[in-house]
Amino acid sequence: MLAGGVLGASLALGAVSAAAMGSLVEGEETDTCSNEDGAFDDAAFVIATGPKAGERVESGFEVTGCSRSFESNVQWKLLARDGAVLASGNTTGGGVDGPGAFSFTIPYTVTVQQIGHLEVFDEDVSDGEGFPPGRTVIPLVLKP
Image 1 (cartoon, rainbow, N blue to C red):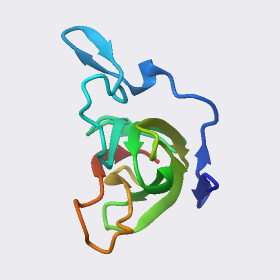
Image 2: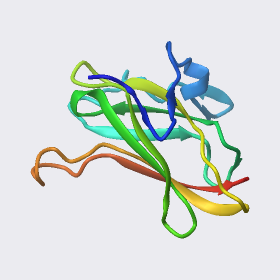
Image 3: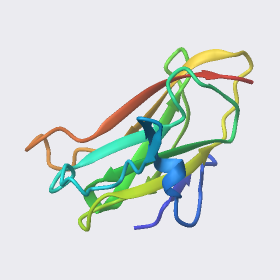
């Protein structure tokens, strides 16, 4: 499957560093994609780790995360305050072999600063069978 984007999104090539994927736990950086505890065994999920909720972003901001999804496919869309789709696309993360990191950038255009929402998700190809697909929704302040 080809990774890339629609409406001008670009895939950041190369591996995503653990630092870009991590979060702080008791003052130490952790790798969100780590499966040492087996929590991600046979689980489908999409976890966007950056940007953080409420962050002020500008066109070209980077999105990072970890996923395990059907055919490693991760969908995304950026919505304006009124619900209009400003940008959308897809990238690849982890799949049948286990969790994997993803990273991409989102160019967009708005004329006024506003609250928007970034949705990063896995589409439900099972027609409703099993667990619902993974989805992360992040409210952001979109700067012109």
